[in-house]
Length: 364
Image 1 (cartoon, one colour):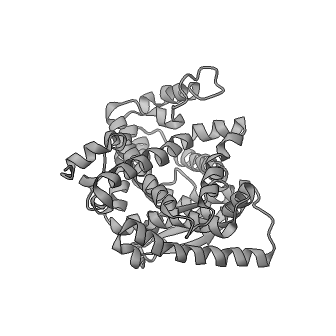
Image 2 (cartoon, rainbow, N blue to C red):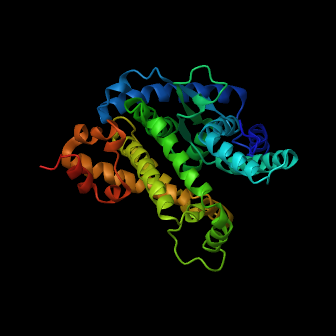
């Protein structure tokens, strides 16, 4: 295990820095946890009905956890430790070969990066409503390496439903529809976790091969951020702009397409329900989409730096792709996407769904 990131420090730092959640009594906390678990269970048959994916009928390979912000951050340090394990080992090996990283320096580096990651997770811990984590189970402490886990962040869900002034039961079910869809996706495509892990490793390997220019690229990316005085393109992705090599861009393009597919598909499912299932769904969506207008300058800067605005575009682009494919070939035709990595859409196909339909031999 690499020591370049102190994962325990990252988790504890995030727990200390995370903003306080909504004030709730012990009884209110217990009631909210029980209700979220109920809504998580209730949402699965709807996901099954909408997606037509039979795995939704029996999701025994993963678990649902109702967590607070600190627990979400801890879970993500475990997931990151899996995703970055081979990358960090290669960084250490390269540093040793160049005699550039002494044990004392490595310990200091681990402390610094752990604290920095903790600060990032603290910020994100108050923004995320839910997350399906397929990677943390691969951590050494996991006794069930095949199991993923769905995290529902209770204080954030409660904060947003209060902020929007929407019906709590409707909002919780609506959120669970999205998050349970992610759980179903990985159950329908059991190869997907290893594929994504391989692609992350490929991208990180390419970045390691271009370390000499990394400082210059960081500087260039920062200059393009809002508030720097040089930003000219609002579509820039913050840290994503560090990728300039053609191979890096190709690797990122594939991951972007996969994430757009997953997020877009989940959004389509959560919006496919009508008022008979979520009576106030139209109000929820309208108010939820308007939230970003009130963000302050500092939060907008941080979101852009972390690439969160680019992630939001993935929801929109992916949903547009899913709807277009389903309109052309129906949900059974779309579900071919879960059969193998070769069936995944490219980023070009995300923006031109007809290309994917044609490649799959579905065009009539």
